[in-house]
Amino acid sequence: MAGISLGSLLSSFKNHTRKILIYSEIFHFIFYLSAYFSLINNKFPLILIFVSGFLTGWEFGIISFLFKKENLIDITGKLYSIDLMGALFSSLFLPLFFIPGFGIYNILLLIPILKFSNFLNLFK
Image (cartoon, rainbow, N blue to C red):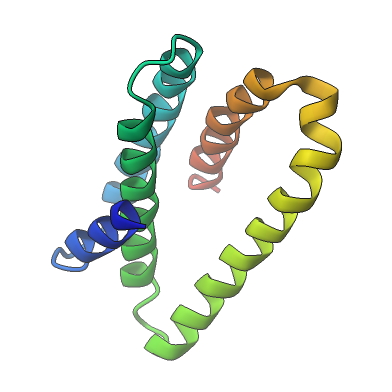
């Protein structure tokens, strides 16, 4: 939670462009791919959790700024509802289907793949 709070706080002080979102997605992909290999060797798990939370909070701030045309309450509500839907999906499907089917480390490899698909989606 401290990482998410710090990331969203720091990203709220900066004017963001689509270019910064693209760089953020690239950095996310590189971070999660390197985190996969770090977790296999049990290196720095608490730091990885903090940085992952920071990057998530940072991305929330960027998305909020890019949707600034809308009302702040609407933006916050939409982002929060999307976040809750993702939490629902991951809390139901990960332990019931994905982890027993693929294993924990293969699921950890799924995160950078999803971030890369999110990066490709920026160019639509």
